[in-house]
Length: 452
Image (cartoon, rainbow, N blue to C red; front, top):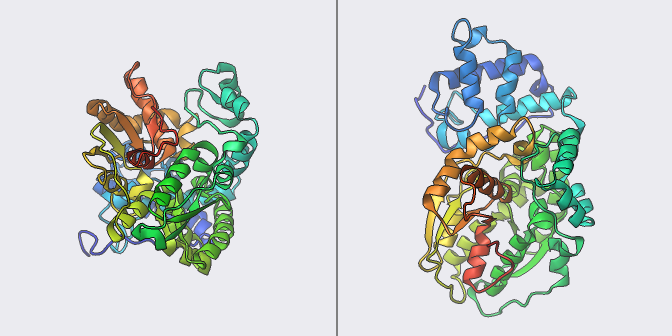
């Protein structure tokens, strides 16, 4: 047996519709097999709270080994996993194709699928993850919704804590009014496309994603404007959520349905010669990597995965293959750039850093560690303090850098970082995070509302 993997990391199809996948005894045996390898290695001790919990559990056992740990005590280990994939991507030497075949995040997912099948997922957990429905409803009463969910509204947050298990201190994203939802604005505001740049032969469908569509439309508006400056025709669509929120709770039936629905819609654009650009890294990861493992026999999904790019990845591709049009203004002010875990899990390199370094005099410091947020997970009462704990090294690094801008590809991670920084240093000048594409747009002289 080799001491480390001999090939690029690969992942197996998630056989969630096979009865053995949710067989409790089979799962327990596989958890014990993989946990024992983790116990003997421990390289991942500092990534998230799952591994310290696992190692403390084993160390406190009568034998100091897994044989005297009860299976019911695995629950806190599973609960702490954010499915960030960083143990798989950056730490574990035993991932496939290694013979030991360790995939800790997908093992945790398997456990959650069994819990979901047993009915252990709560009503509140399901409802807060219906991001399309929640966004559409909240956009019609955005002012009231944002007031009710503000951390300064003690009564509103008490209600959210009781009804939805949301921690009273966790920052939640604001919603934009219905008239300002990304797909609505894009349809209402035609954008001239330059006909001269080398990239003008390209056409792009911008997959809006829930976060950009309902919470941060400026991400999509900036992307559209940058592509138009480079002669690239764009269309903004949002056929549905990618299913990442449902993946968190092990509802793979819902994820598979989302994959089939969205892929069937987007593939019609691929057939017309369009590239697909996803605005947030979690959604790009789902389209490119997770969907093909969950619905491997769906041809639309397979073809869509090959046609999809992360927004930063696509801009860098245009720059390398076609050259960028126009002139970018210098950006000498320091930027602390957080590379989101789900960007890193796409195994494409730090494309957001590559993109920003196309700007003259760019002063970029990359922060490549988990923010700790983990989607809706990090806002829930049992997890919020853990999310702050995991993200603390990022918060401290940002404070050390004293940047003019804090930037993250993930809107939720960006807000979480700013909250963590403010809790470590009340009164800090850092008030908001900004997506890298907005900084890139600003270098082009395009202003769609970069947070100050």
